[in-house]
Amino acid sequence: MTTVLIVEDDPINLRVFSKILTKRGGLDVKGTEDVEEVMRAAQAREIDVILMDVSLAHSVYQGKSVDGIKITQMLKSDPQTSSLPIILVTAHAMEGDRENFLKQSGADGYISKPVVDHQEFVNQILQYLPQDG
Image 1 (tube, rainbow, N blue to C red):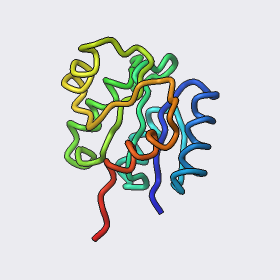
Image 2: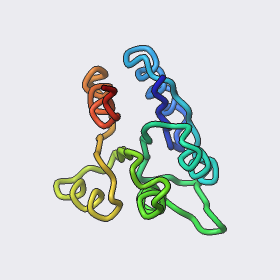
Image 3: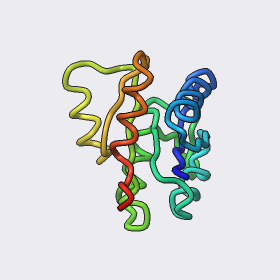
């Protein structure tokens, strides 16, 4: 079973994303905005892909306030977790932002909110998963 970790500070978005991914994508979903939890799950290989909200309002790691870009950088710079696909999710998508966010963070992909086409959303996530066989 493929597990998606949704790192999102808005409970409504989290619920919507979870529902789409479980119902339409047949995926297992975990959600948290606790950075320690994200790191632990990534290192323990409990998850297959991370959906990372760029603008996390409440997330703190080791006493510092961090956003999705920062968390992605931390995961990508650790050899233990660097191969884990991370897809950024942001509502603030201006032309050029996408490239900047991807370059800055080292993330694998990018999805804009709001998610309108549910199937497309699922497909975008599936394409980053390691293909079996």
